[in-house]
Amino acid sequence: MVIDKERKKEILSEYKQRKTTGGVYKITNTANGKYMLKAEVDLQSFQNRFNFSMRINSCLHPIMQKDYNEFGAGVFVLEFLEEVEKKDNESNSGFRDRLKRLEEVWAEKFDREQSY
Image 1: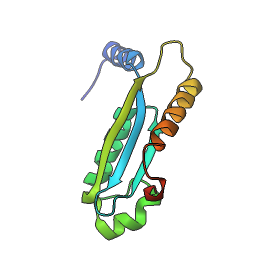
Image 2: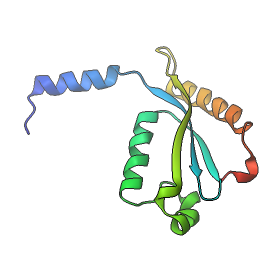
Image 3: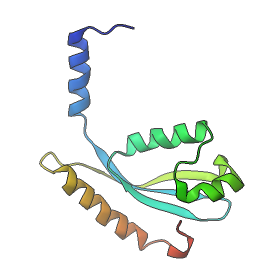
Image 4: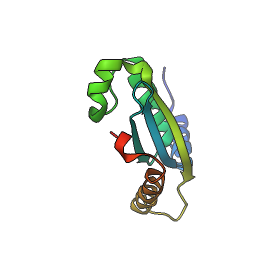
């Protein structure tokens, strides 16, 4: 498949102009109730990585490897707890900081004993 230069520029421009949606996600091991809670700058990209990891039967994060080996991919469920858009005037580091604070707020709502 060959894409001409103008179309390539158009695609790149559209990509750069898309809104970045970050947020907080939770991966739960339904077999034992343990979970991993994290903030992510680009939730759609993370969703793609999670789906790909499950499809190829690969553990997404080393901290969950033992349970992954014991229970398999089928017990891990991903849920987005809160989504936020990056503001036009917000720096990348400012956005990451805002997401980290959001993660801390969500962490208070769950039993830390069950966290990976």
